Length: 279
Image 1 (cartoon, rainbow, N blue to C red):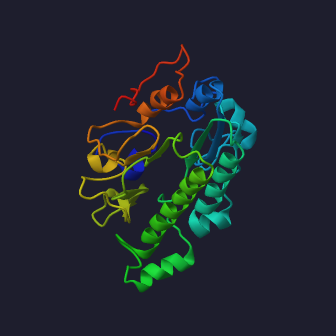
Image 2 (cartoon, rainbow, N blue to C red):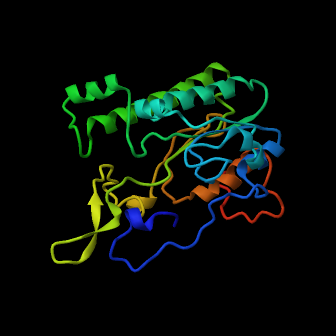
Image 3 (tube, helix red, strand yellow):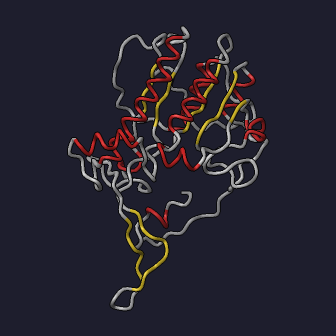
């Protein structure tokens, strides 16, 4: 659990963060390295969050360090003005489309980790105003900014799918859309505040992205924190739409995508996940 307990954990729980590694080692195997070895062009755009050094940080993988992790291409962090406008959704989508267009005859792997729908929410002003005119509140659940950011992200994902169609790659392109965690219901200020009776307590900050009907949210081991969508789009392999209710995990994606590419993890790499292709 990495930087979860102080912000989202129950303040009365007798738990503390374990020591953790902040710098992902260059020599470690990655999904991108496995696909690169199989002949794929590889790209990483958006949130990285596996380093706090010159290789990258929370926001991005530094282009000069991309090769160490199996990527041919990455970009600098989204500039502040774009983050404030729409969390960089349009800019990151542009990068992804340009990468796809640059490889019309080579298989490609594009890891696109949008900052949108992650605090702080942002969206184009005109879209926010439209939701306000439609009666959505300024704050709380269903507020205009939250709704606008959701529609904007949907629109940009659709733009990528349309371009894949236009390039004639629809049937043989596997697209996975996933979220990393549930909504934020409770956030605690890690700096204790002294209350009127002299005791120390963690202050509570507003959370406005609840995961109802599931219990609790981000930082919790209940379904509100862990249960998120996984949407798979692969017309050439999936004959008809259906819903699978069995639980799967993010670690399953590495063996699944390598299998889809006709390869497997390096012999010295201990795979935690399961290959989901039979499912």
